[in-house]
Image (cartoon, rainbow over all chains, first blue to last red):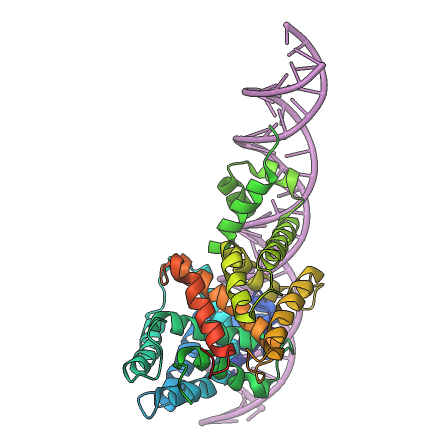
Length: 183
Length: 183
DNA sequence: CCCACATGAGACACTCGTGTCTCATGTCAG
DNA sequence: CTGACATGAGACACGAGTGTCTCATGTGGG
């Protein structure tokens, strides 16, 4: 029976989230298949990472859609976004650090689009007066990624309960982004 | 003339901050010495990373001392801490992700001590009523690390100006940690 | 001046992960 | 049943990075 490509990607994501240097052999074992079969579906480690990147981008876009960023108060949209993106946080954390290695190399333009959508949300919040304007949308976006990664690691190492993930991130991020006189 | 060990460590830190997978050869070249000499001073890559870890811990402890965490309002102490720790942020970012790889392996207990000191600061801020109590000190500590790493990367890639580093981090972190009715 | 010592350059073997290949096995459809 | 096809297991060569060694050079102190 044909290997479930999606299942392979997801177990690879789960493993690489914990240990970013896992070998192809470990990835294969984690997916319950042989290294040979893994290679038949993904030309090499690079191709696997690219596929994971595509998966991560797709999940982000899905979360962005589901969060309906342009509806209601921006702060609520941020909360919805974090809630929607939480299942993918581990994968995002892996890709976030993985991208640090690529240095100048061609960054996938998919990320630029996601960056734009998130920055646009923050900009909307600033325009509406909900968010303070001394923190740039670019920095807020970056900080969101950092907090998602920190949160994912803290959860995976048991320092934070999974059920608190969204609350911890949203409250910290929004508390900083919201104007003081707000609710 | 004997190699300047500190110079070697600092150039290694600068290089590895940019590209965590740099080889021993690249590290040696970056320090202006040969690979053989590098090996004479650090038994291997592992020993080098350990030495960098010790350096990072020392710089953190130094920053913690210089920030006088137990003096004045906790929020001011946080600002002083970020200001003091800023020069080491790149190194910290490298070590932060490097530690993710070590999985269960013996975590350097030096970090636990630093975690404690920072968490104690946040706890003090909570006791004094400056900080909200629904975000745990452990999470605030973790979030601080994440924001420092995000900030360091954002600066090194030009997405944030170095001079804004402290302001961006402190304002975002404190805005979340401070009670709403505060100044 | 001369010796001790640190360094640079290069050679070498070794390990590890990778990518490719072959062959036996198993399974599903016709 | 039989053939097509996907898989598992293992062998193999290759490259990259590492750790060790030797030897020549150069510099500084006695």
